[in-house]
Length: 116
Picture 1 (cartoon, rainbow, N blue to C red):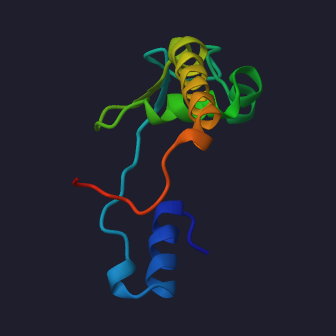
Picture 2: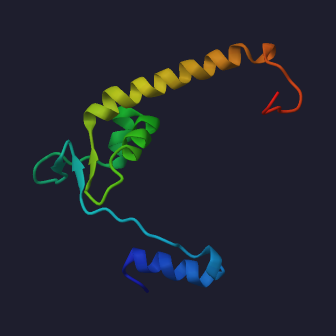
Picture 3: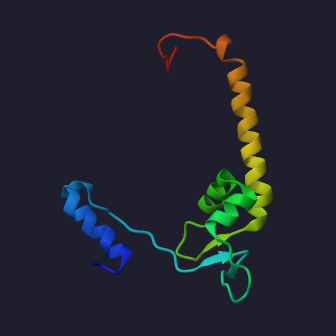
């Protein structure tokens, strides 16, 4: 048994896939921050993934986690983003998709022409 999940993940790729399909990079976070504070049961700002999904929705949580940070800094789960920004962006995306679906019948068909 390999107790470290990262090592186990690498071993599985080496055992299953050819070399050209092995991971080329790994990204790992340190702590997860909630509103720029370290998430901790002791401080009371702890939230499970299940609780976040029940409170905000799976899509809002996904969007917020994707926005939580791409640097070497700890990921910051912002409740303002999940409750305000993410839901607004998802609502706007849904409205745009519905607008497109409403006019799909009037769109031209045929082969794709990139240049006229």
